Image (cartoon, rainbow, N blue to C red; front, top):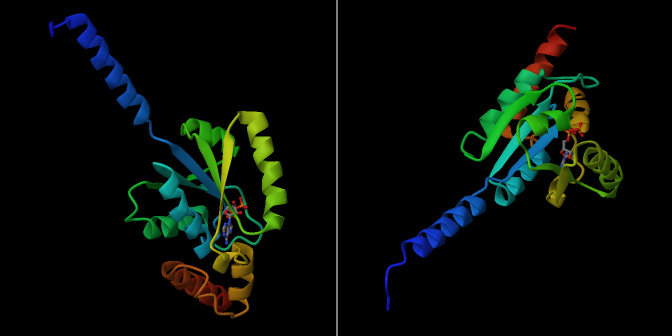
Length: 188
Ligand code: ADP
């Protein structure tokens, strides 16, 4: 009665350890994009992502962007400044196929942001392709409606024509944008 069954107790202990390991699996998301430059909309997606996943890798594509304003290295630097107090966020750049990079990082899902129904159409095709070629799922988060019209392309265009984009990008990005555009107009 109430005896000590070494084998049964070990069995129970191993079961609990296994459960612990299984439940403590890190869920890693990759948030890929051009981020030229990162906007408040992108940052909003990162903030939502860290609530859902243990790790979010912000992956800056190194492939050439039309009318590129910042180099991939500069884009990475700006994002790193922004997320320096967010322990679950890693910022890197990558070359080539995004799903190949995601696999090399052992990412469980791709994180993407949605602004509008127009985004859905494009993102749907991308997500289906990524699933077909690499078997990876995409998770979408909807941005705060304040940023539903914000895009890096528009920011580059409006800022280069002298428009005020200070409400649409983080402060460090706004400073760099002003410096870059001042330099560009001086060197013209
Ligand atoms: P890409 O060139 O791969 O579309 P972007 O840097 O433009 O890269 O965007 C990366 C991701 O961020 C995409 O999922 C895009 O829909 C999303 N995104 C871009 N701008 C916003 C925004 N204002 N709000 C929410 N998501 C956004």
